[in-house]
Length: 218
Image (tube, rainbow, N blue to C red):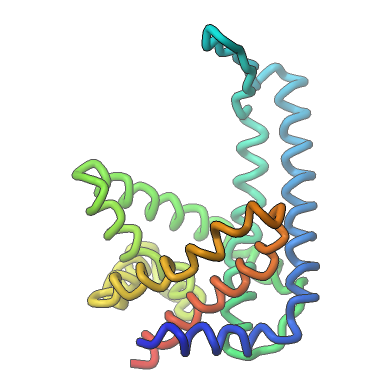
């Protein structure tokens, strides 16, 4: 599977869509910030967050542990927008027309997204207990679960995970190298104050979508 082809197709699919993508990013950021502010406000009001002071001898610093409502609201936002954002980029990779409002189209899959994410995280953690390499392999095996569910809404949780493992059989190393090929761009992001991410994240995500699209064509 040629990485250059996947990347070039991603660039072509993204052409003319960055304006809408930036609007989408801003909307997601605003919703997340609002949810975070509301959660933090409730946590402070009910004294559910804790401020800890760490003394290192030569200096001290204070950090705040996340409270119940901050975590809960973040979880709700992630669940509501999760599948919508993924489908947004999947549609771009398939050269379909998109609109930032599309990210709200899959809010009905809220519960499935959260439980599927929980299962993937749990299985990856359990494999990681054996050693770091099995954990990485497991993460790669489960990396297509969200795309698969969007294309196969009838699949249940374990069937979705099983399908991802089947699709990634023999392709995990390719997927790992594909992600690694972006490392140079990723390292540049901090030097642009994060601005580069507005271009890089869609580029990486649509390229990943193209990888998935190629696999299901076989």
